[in-house]
Image (tube, rainbow, N blue to C red; front, top):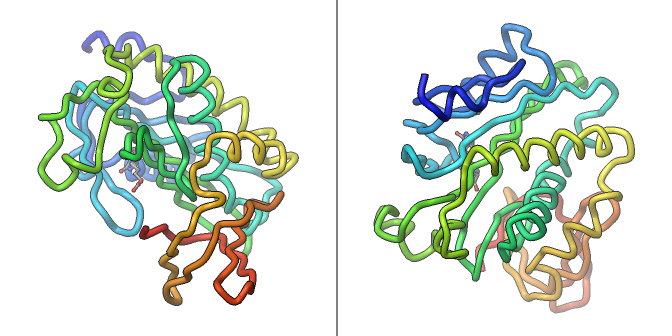
Length: 253
Ligand code: BTN
């Protein structure tokens, strides 16, 4: 075991030097009955996955790649959809307040510093007959990468906490701090929904008030991002002052 593995031990935390994807790995454990709150963390992912079928660059020794398994007992599938917003709000608050890093949220859950992406969240759900069997929250954070560590495709658009803050960050301390806040926040979300997290999300977001183009499954929507409701729905006002509620998609500009 290396130092990283030895330090992060504890019930239900699985550390691997290399995995295909921590989301896939925790899904396999979930299928074997792993309990809620189990975490898979890896130093390197060979097939890290991003949203919308993209891959996620996950080299060794530099980032934080982990996935959390949740089994909320009483949550209905639609009520789970703000989970990524909740996760982004908790991560941004933690990185700003404990690590003094100016991390911002771009709707719905990209973590940016000075407009460049430093982290992302991939949430996956297993639902059987209208009931959530489990949720997986996969978190990727670029922590200590130098600019030359990024491949050409993301060299302009990506950044790391190190590049933004000018100092290397102890990934174990960072993981422990984020884990504590996330595992404290999720039970509150399951009990009271998105509203206790709305102010935090709003405090750190850079989307509200802007003109945006949103790619949705049913086409593009252009307009001003007006507000985020208590239920976690983004409200977009188009040029004809028509208001559209949006709960998933991606901002293309
Ligand atoms: C995004 O596209 O913004 C989401 C990226 C999520 C990446 C993380 S890294 C840990 C977990 N395992 C994966 O394969 N993906 C997520």
